[in-house]
Image (cartoon, rainbow over all chains, first blue to last red; front, side, top):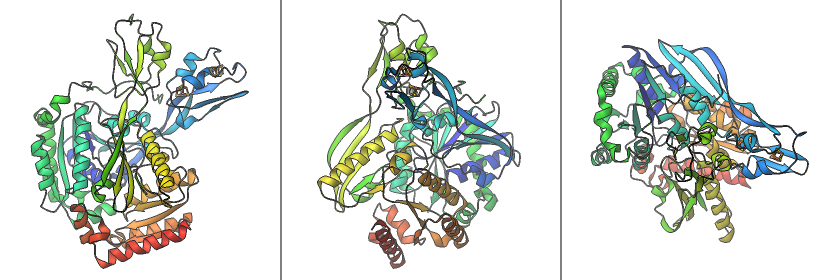
Length: 309
Length: 257
Ligand code: SF4
Ligand code: SF4
């Protein structure tokens, strides 16, 4: 089972929640934590895994044979991402702009382009207290993270609980992470910003046809804003974690919430059983109307486009 | 001149109470659609598409389609059409602090880097038109395409961090990125007094990298309350917070001159 933990904005406590969830789940069964926030991965700070292996993730890029090239300009013309510039005697490639679509090597009339590979980051694997741990780390300066996120997700283990720590926001990196998940937990704060970002995140998750539930973090007891929103949209409000000075200090030092407050474990256990006992189907209503639009595809895609194998 | 470049989760307008003066659609890359009447079912596009965006039955998944147009160029029957795709909206608003350019990315859209670039371009145009000297850009989190798009050509990047292990880790990544693109950076530590020890670690990190720490903002209940009410912190915070923000501004002015 794949459970994604996401939030519309950063700093809501997504990683603390995801790591606590993993720790609680590990007491009962097999669990693996996949840090899909490849731009700023933080899960390792909470779970402190011992690294066992790492692998470079590569994406395809054109290799231009300047000898065969006739400088016709066709490649630059078809590249939708403006990654190629054809000068009178040279073809220039801007690798970080290339999306690896293959257009140029399929369409070069002179057969001067062949596919090559370029490294964009690393996938590292390890384990921590019985929790399998995978993280992706994007090289600094790289613009496009989804292929790396796919490479992280390829390490999901069927039959185990896979917890995906998603990047913040609602655009492509998050979509890549959440797409194909069985359930998505949306973490928010009880502020107007939290609400606004939650609205966007819910729409995003619904458009992917993934059922979701809401967790309020740093609640001070007054969660009306969020509660109303959940009621109106038929979303389950699964957990309200109080604002807790000690938990915040623990977070600052890389200690997950359930280690600071072991008594919170039962909340997380309840959350897990809700998800596992088909909370999924019960909670789907939020996105039901939109579900058919795109993404009935629940499978993990098995594409080789990351070229990491 | 204000520009909200966190286009995924644009929040600035919630605080500044703007009056929207104009809105315009933002077009992302065109996306493919397949005209079934022309399609012979040769499967070429299915094989070529690296994004697995074409499903059996020749339906293009608009979320997966990146708009590369390979199928359009390759299709022997000309069955693929590239159609305009509105990926979001761009707004020009007026606030009592100055003009604001902001945007809203459509749900489940990519192109956030392009939209950031569009927001910045519009902000620049307006700033020149209205003779504004300073553009303050609210950037997105992370180090990927929207952030890169946000950094280019800025005079100064103010990186806001928190005294937590995660905050420090993220800070290093952003400073690496700024360095990579040759942008000048300065750091502000928010809620510095929550974990003074971590704040010191952040400071020594900045020292080592020769990045100035230009501000220390305290943890302040009144600021939390202001945010809950959706009000700018400076209007409703305690004296210490106000002092902290003003000191930050003074330091920034020095750097910007
Ligand atoms: S399409 Fe091929 S031959 Fe034409 S400029 Fe590009 S690389 Fe050279
Ligand atoms: S592979 Fe696609 S994106 Fe990359 S340079 Fe070639 S045409 Fe452009």
